[in-house]
View 1 (tube, rainbow, N blue to C red):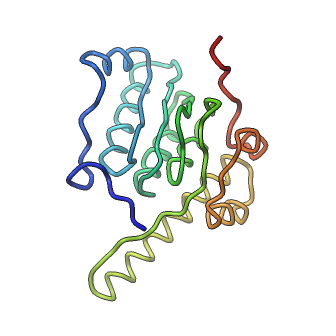
View 2 (cartoon, one colour):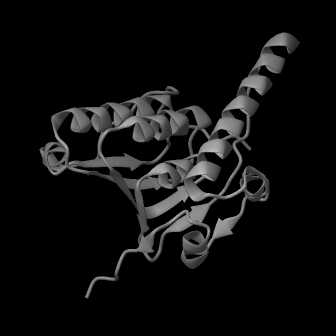
Length: 193
């Protein structure tokens, strides 16, 4: 099963559903939103915001995360950007972090989730067409991207890469307490009064 981005053209960044001025207000507070499908376009937009905030000051950045699907390429763009910043990134999962987006949560300096958040390892399907040589190249590229994702998640959580590979292959769900033990989360956001 292949998940497609909600926009009509792959890589297109969907228009924001935020009210006018909200995106600017969040940016001023050093908050970046990563919501929905995490493809190349969305990832480059998030990476650009993170790098801009890094250049504008030394205070930490808060990344609000809710993504059920995406590409390994998109996730790796954001993961590598977070790892290269000179300021700490706190990622808060407010809905779900599944598939490639789980890696974004993993590599952040501080990782929190709302009580209802859903965390899941989920391997990415590969959709490709072309000649046999093109298909072989696409499979090899996909396997290299997946290996890099596993390496980054394993390093961020101090888990053996083999354990991350098994959890990915099994599409494992993690309860929040399990995610803390796994060192994928640092804590759970308190419930509002």
